[in-house]
Amino acid sequence: MGRHPDRAVARSGLPPGPEEHTRPGPSLVERLDAIPGVGPTTAHILLAELGPDMAVFPTADHLASWAKLTPRTTQSGTKRGSSPTGRGNPWLKSALGEAASAAARTDTYLGARYRRIVKRRGRKKAPVAVARSILIIAWHLINDPDTTFHDLGSDYHQRLIDPKRRTRDLVRQLNALGHDVTLAPAS
Image 1: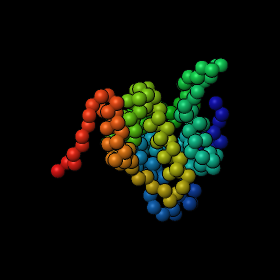
Image 2 (image 1 turned 45 degrees about the horizontal axis):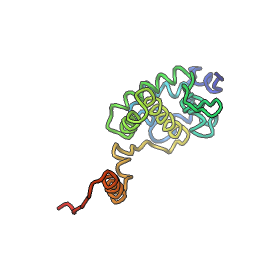
Image 3 (image 1 turned 90 degrees about the horizontal axis):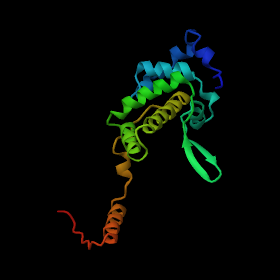
Image 4 (image 1 turned 180 degrees about the horizontal axis):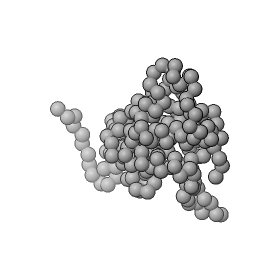
């Protein structure tokens, strides 16, 4: 595991620079605290482990890969399979794991994401996916000081579905099962 270059600065206990006191708007901890599942303690842990400068990670995917929260595929010949994500930073992963389990119990986009992933991938992979989503959101909040968190809502995926297409697909499925379907508009 490589060492993070900002870790020594983040843990040094130095007082914040003058730009921290003069920056208008909510502080970085308050913006991270707006993420569902992330509290002030988790926000402080994220800042301590990641540092306030995201120049080290050019994209959010680089950060997720460094934290070992990306899916891994192993291949031997023509066989492909998934493997554990790796160890990563234990303090960061434990804080994100707790935040993911807290977010899973909320009626937000992250809670809906957890429930959607549990259905098709299982209870072990869903918290890792939600933790990765939280880390990606944190990267965007830390990287751009003008960004604030806005929840998409638990019905985000339902709003994306085109009702006409969904109706056509369901009628097609019922016809394939041998049923004759006649639709009448609802009053």
